[in-house]
Figure 1 (cartoon, one colour):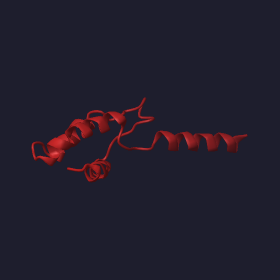
Figure 2 (cartoon, helix red, strand yellow):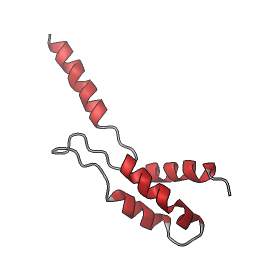
Figure 3 (tube, one colour):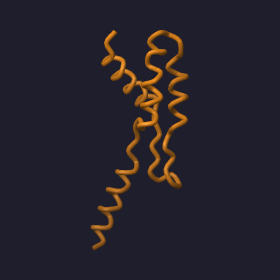
Figure 4 (cartoon, one colour):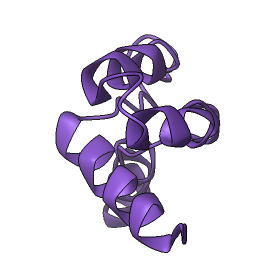
Length: 84
């Protein structure tokens, strides 16, 4: 029975430790893409705005903090899909 508990614990740990861009952060970034393209706001300011919506989890478990690299990757994927 003990190996089963270890497996379940590891699966839960992996499930709750995956970081990325949350839905709230995607909304903030998507709303600012036009302003970034027009040079009216910097990427850094948008990153700081979106960073405010990091999921902190409960006592650190289940936290989902967006990194600068994840932000850049998401932004690149969105900008390349927008056609002028």
